[in-house]
Image (cartoon, rainbow, N blue to C red; front, top):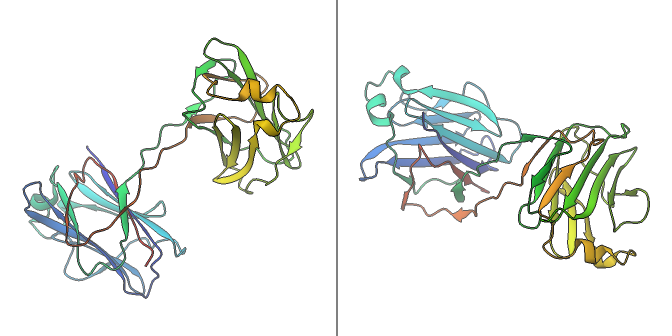
Length: 304
């Protein structure tokens, strides 16, 4: 089945009675139904044309955080609503007591969306980012990768004190070795940029978050190399600041075309390209927005 997802990021709080109100229409402008989420004393919802009259409590209540991202996923047979990754309801159209629910909502029908005038929660919307798959790390294998155009993410579950290491070699298009990047899980998190940093290990100026599951992002420009962990920048190393005179000549410019996980790397589990996020667009109420809800994931953010 074709799946579409709509997410709403919100910091509305329970008890505020603020609402997300999204109408859906066919490509020709025929009204299908609406989706509402209400921040009452409990979180409640309506799927217009399907749920019983009035508000229904979500079978699962959302997480306690004020900042919430709501995800609405539609197929030809059902509509699911999640919050911060927790599924709250998966509503099957054929189970509705309203006989018109399937005929209205079933199939690939939504071609336009419309934020209703009294929606006081939704502020921005965009297509939901399509996350690339995590690929298992294969060591001692050359992987084509333009590091200057495609930031690299590496996933680990190593803990500080284990002395496990990420060891990534970089190469030019012709196979000439440029240098290496190492991260060590010592009592502190440490790094090496081969050919640039001083001999031995250097503590990151900022230490990574404490979660065991970590996503490391390596971003390179012609002038510097940055390493982040779970969204936190740990170091942004400028090549010209190195005491090694060959650092800029090796690493400077658009040079990395291949990567290689070294054999004794015992920390790297998976890798992928860093997801590229589409821009947020301001919500315009009482405006028809062309959107195939079954095929195009949609996110909505609020900061009411």
